[in-house]
Image 1 (cartoon, rainbow, N blue to C red):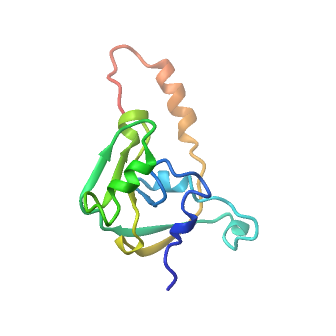
Image 2: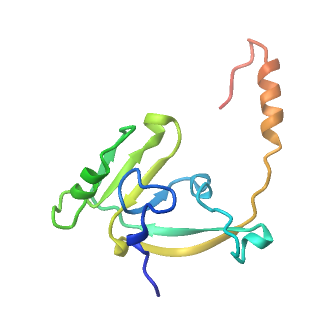
Amino acid sequence: MEDFKLALAGTGKGALYGRGLYFAEASSKSDEYAGEDAGDALSSKNLHAMLLCRVVCGRILYTDAEKPDAELLERRCAVASGEHDSVLGDREACRGTYREYVVYQAPQVYPEYIVVYRRKENKEKKSVAKIKKKKSKDVPERE
């Protein structure tokens, strides 16, 4: 089996937390990276894929910095330093989006499943927006 190619880390979508392997708690975050490559066997059928992985995070270095120092994070998680094993980038805290987990060593990751799926348009978003505009002051808001 071929390993993850860490040498290519950050070449596609950037590397906010350094050159590592990025994971998320929410599949919707991972879906942002499930692109449609020309010539991809799945894209011709309007399908996408993501990996469901087991990740050993070990000692986690937490950051909620909006613009973290990627080199510093990598150094603090380097095997030689022994200080930390992974990074938890809390974008939920600083930007209201998703939390991201980053590891810098391929052996920390075991790809358990390949999930193949088709995106479905969310027609409910439009109706939810209309409901909020018409809402009475007496009705409590639901999240």
